[in-house]
Amino acid sequence: MAQAYDCLAEWFELLNDDCDYACWSQYFIDGLTRLGAGKKGLELGCGSGAFSRALTKAGYCMTGADRSAPMLNKAVRLAKEEGLSIPFVQADAATLKTPERYDFLLSPNDCYNYLPSAVLPRAFKRAAACLVRGGIFWFDISSPCKLRTKIANNVMVDDRDTVTYLAFNTLKEDRVETDVTLFVESGGAYRRFDEHHTQYIHEEETVRAALAEAGFTLLSMEGHLGEEASASDRWNFLCVK
Image 1 (cartoon, rainbow, N blue to C red):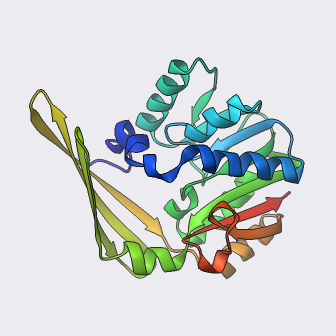
Image 2: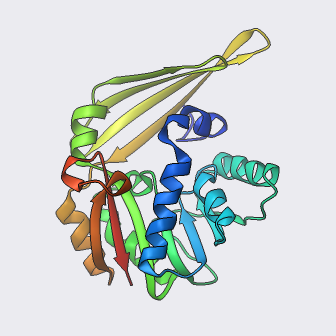
C-alpha cells in the first residue's frame, strides 16, 4: 500500500473543491495583515500548493514545503500553469531545516496531525528555527472531537465523473488510521489505487505546552475562518516567536 498522498496528490484539490480555497486563503491574508507579518513566507505541508499560489498572487514571496514528492510535483505543475514562480522543496515538519529565515510560517490543513504528540515539541522548535525574531507561526489541526466522533469508525465517499474516493477510518488510542482507495477512470476502465494515512489526536493542553517549550507565545486560538474554537472542527493556533 502506498504512503499518504502518493496517489491522492493528483486529485487532492479536485476532491477538496468544496472547502472554498479562495475564502480560506483570504482568511490567512487578512490575518497576516492584521498581525503585521512581513512578506516572506513558508507554507509547510503545502500539498499541491493552493495556499502558496493564492498568497503569491496577493503579493507575498512564498516557498512551499511538503514531505510528499507527488504533492510537490503537482504543486510545481499547477504553479507553472498559472504563470507563478514559486520554489517548492521537500521537507518534513519533524526535521525541518531551511537555509534562510522567514517572516511567517503557515501550516494549514492538518499538517501537524500527521505527527505523534510526543514529536510536537521538536517539530515546533524546528519551526521556530526557520523564523526571524517576531516571526509568525500559524498552523491548524483537526480537533480531537472531529477525529474521534466524526472521522473515526466512519467511511467517507466522494464519487466524481473521473474519480471515486473512499476512506475507511479506524480509531486507535491516540490516532485515526485511514485506508484510502481511489478508482480513477482511464480509457473507459477504472484503475485502483490504495494508500494509508495516520492522523494523531492532539489535545489543546498538549499543543500549548509544546509551543511554550519551543519558545512561542500563543497570541490566539480560534476555529476555522475565525469562528469559536469550541464549536469548530479545526483549531488555528496563531503564535509569535
